[in-house]
Length: 296
Image (cartoon, rainbow, N blue to C red):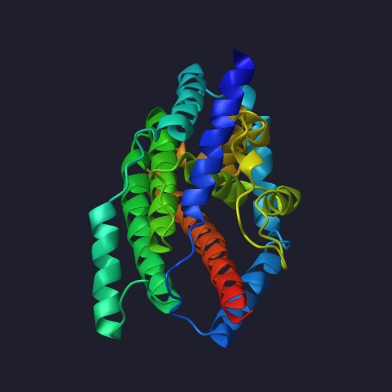
């Protein structure tokens, strides 16, 4: 029975991959333009190897103070594990503003005189606009929860996680990747991990996603296996630890307003940037591959 279930899940994964990888009817970008864009993304990926010293330091205090963190915060973090699992399996409650994203794309395309399938430039501008909106929302949300210090920190953690997954999905939609498919929800979680990982973690995720230089950018069927996630605990723990001293300072009442706003804005900025670049590279690689096939 277990083997039949695994086989059915594998078939479902294959169907989703096939559906997600349907070739575009026409490629609105020229090869030289795509190659330039690809070099930009690859330069950004190389820059990710240089982890700022303050980010390294930021991972230390939260780990040291983990033992004295109030139990209700640990309980809230524990509940996130179930939410993430439910998100990948069923879509969870991290809803996206689909109509808004479509509207943004259409408005930008109209101004540029473009039509679907949209050129990469239209997708890029839409992704940057969606990212900016998410940063503003996160800033306001961080300031609000910073008022109560550690007592509202428990509410802030799931809120930021929800905003992060939301913006990842919306940026993905800008590049025509729909989170209604399970394989895309797993990709969204991997983007979340990438944004909060150290240098070694980032390289491992790029390898796993076939997003290294010279790869085709397609998601391998095995990516949906739970073993690839290495447990939901790692996702949330890594995400939480990356906040470090920023979240520690948010735990100070009143002063947490400033630090909370800064921390949340920075977190969403990192997540949105990672989503923008990783989805962008996928779309570039797929279009280059399609152009190669059409010319052969």
